[in-house]
Length: 442
Ligand code: CMC
Image 1 (cartoon, rainbow, N blue to C red):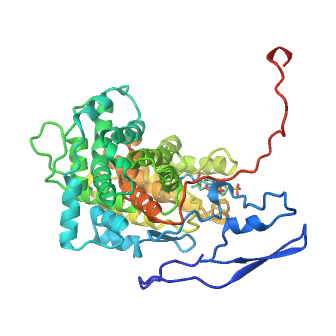
Image 2 (cartoon, rainbow, N blue to C red):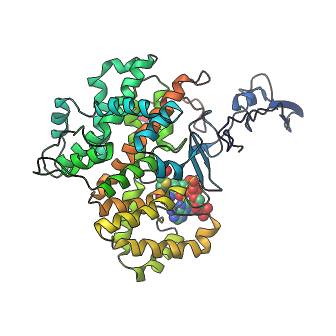
Image 3 (tube, helix red, strand yellow):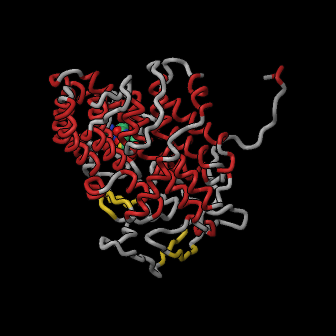
């Protein structure tokens, strides 16, 4: 597909007056369908009928393999070339030159902030990091070993009951307030979920710290009067949040848009997005990678493991992507970042297994033919683990960074006059009409 944004940063209009001519071999009729930005509208196919009774043709596309569900100006991916840009800016430049909060501003507002805008934005987010005291009681209700991602998803949904005015989704001020609140509060909810799971008291946000530093504070502070975050680790975490911030129409962004299209409040939609992220095929894959490396155990077991994957007895987690058919650019950045983190924390011994696994997989015909490369989740878990995050927290860390992307997607959806409530069609293959037989005769 043609990029919607030219490399120079200028908007590129790919509109043409081109059309597609379709001949229906059932009837011999011809139809001319307009092509817009390299797409045809599925609704334009409805005119194709065998007779007046016919409902009209639909497209069939389970899992959206070749269907654009929206027009977007947020994130551009070229999966064959391994390119990822937010609002036109390459991901590696953002990771090198911007903070997570600058990137979040960019995703939401469309432009990088100037100094004054960044100060105001940071202040607005920082002053919304606290949660209502009753959230703690809510957290306390979870079983002692509850999975932190389950707690995180539920408490995001619970926030809607604390902020009922967020229902006014057509009010730009209300929307912005929710954006501050959700970006501000997700690290707090995440850290509270972790602290609950290890039976430690909750740590209040420290508004003198940066976004990433404060998260480390709420996670790991013990008895010291003021938590002193390690600068290298805080920077690494900030970069990881940037790398995870958005990824165009992935499963969770689609959940945010689909649920948001019913005009429910944004907390409920964000909870649905976080729930979608929880799955092992999506954001849950970073935890699965670690379980997989544990299971492999040592380098000499890798060939046997690869054989099993090729025999269809499981997947190489952290490999493959619906869109990337090349090295995931985020994985490249994370691999470099790992060296800096390991200098502080010591090398994660599983790195050697991961590197060898990657080396073997990238030479193996099975993976080469299917264009399966390491994705963002392959190396991120090794960093998280070296930083002392438990494996169950990995999807939660993904979700913290992704919140800004979900909110940008949600806002774009609401402001798009072409969008309506998401409601797919189906191909019904069940019974035709039949009569209910009474219970005694069945
Ligand atoms: N290990 C082994 N084989 C694989 C893998 C893998 N990780 N991924 C795909 N394949 C095979 C798959 O079996 C299929 O083979 P065949 O053509 O013989 O049937 C072929 O490659 C195409 O795969 P697919 O399942 O049709 O591809 P998809 O686009 O539907 O799935 C995916 C994409 C990411 C769900 C999948 O690659 C996968 O399950 N990977 C492992 C989980 C993972 O790492 N997920 C994180 C994705 S990145 C983070 C995010 O953005 O969510």
